[in-house]
Length: 414
Ligand code: ADP
Ligand code: MG
Image 1 (tube, rainbow, N blue to C red):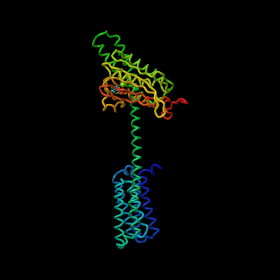
Image 2 (cartoon, protein in one colour):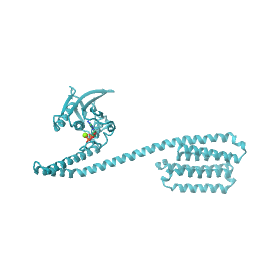
Image 3 (cartoon, rainbow, N blue to C red):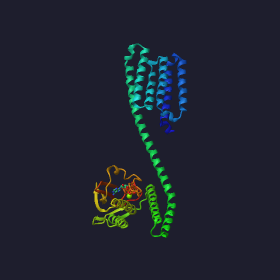
Image 4 (cartoon, protein in one colour):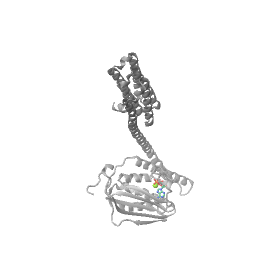
């Protein structure tokens, strides 16, 4: 009920009935209706019928641009005829004109509402002029009414516009986040379905590969197929990771040790001696409160990117340090490479899921890394100069995530 009242239809319907009620009450109390009872009651009945018909109209109708104009014409004719037929200019019969301006201000843009207020004023002056002597126009009672039409249009129009914009913004952001959610559900639904058959295909290909002779065309084909299956499996797993809500399993961990482990794993699995590794690890342990699996996964993704950026070799530099930003203790891990760098126009797309420039890439590594850092109240930044290299910083608060950012509890007293 409340929602209906607050909808545009609700407001317009209420104001329309108010208009009829005001005219009836004013007509009766001032006795103006006796001037021509038939005209008075016909007008009231017609407008009431119109209102009843309007109440049955679908909500959407009230958002059409023509509705304001139709209402304006109908209302003006109704009130104008009522006043004119009852010679009610000395009475309070001018009051309904305010309601017309109000309806206009609520259903139309601010500029249109003002235009309607001006039109009402002109019409009103015309009726006063036709009715009485020309001198009555200068009567202060009339003159004061006119600016009020404009003031009402201005204020109501402004407020209605602001409310409308706000509710439209809320509406569209709600629709958007619903769409994102259903897309996420779809993606992870598909990923779940695909995961098991992929495992079966991968296992089958591995068995096949073992039985094939050491050289030969078939072997190359099966190896390529296995590589592609591996890529799709990674993509499926990472899509699931990206869509799934995080549940931090936090504890104390040493950033230095985590980074060392990551570099050892990654460099070990890709060691070809062409990449030199420089370590600038802080001498003292850098303890922080967080989920070690997720933090290490984030570092893995960044180190892997750095190594992949230097296929011809180069220098991988990793370092850690502690810092204090506005009283908050933080730890920082830097991972730099001397690869080709990232062009400026690509920088803003780095965190877009599935954005990749690699034939075997998934485009999810950085999105995931940043998601994991954000879950800890941390941040991931990328600086890059084409032809020189790229430097990625992972920044994490020592105390872990602030409580409202995650359900995980931060340690007491740190
Ligand atoms: P993927 O590695 O699967 O492509 P990521 O999200 O990890 O996905 O990275 C997205 C893209 O960002 C990469 O395809 C690459 O173009 C760029 N990129 C990331 N790290 C680096 C880096 N260290 N040097 C150059 N380009 C990078
Ligand atoms: Mg990557």
